[in-house]
Image (cartoon, rainbow, N blue to C red):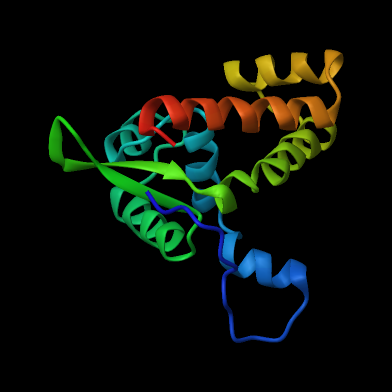
Length: 151
């Protein structure tokens, strides 16, 4: 599999924050990336095994967008060539610090009912540094990707 790192080309002048938001700035794009970090790999898992309930047409659009940006890639499942198994590229793995900061900001500034994942993640914040958590999540994903996809 070729997962070489290439920069995204965009023909636009602007603030780096505005460019990032133009590419990634909707809820569903970031949640698909989050779910990949959680080990989901197929359309069915993204569509039907998540608390947020993404519509299938929106999911198709976001997967296509992430593929075009080189943030994710896929392979056909060996046992069923009709099923795509998606994975994060290096560019996608580079997004974990953003997910970390979004979660940390919400915990600090928003009152809401915590999911089980959020409760577990919040416990990590008490005992591990930001660098350790980011390193742990990215390394865990790299290990998962290597076991599942061989690279």
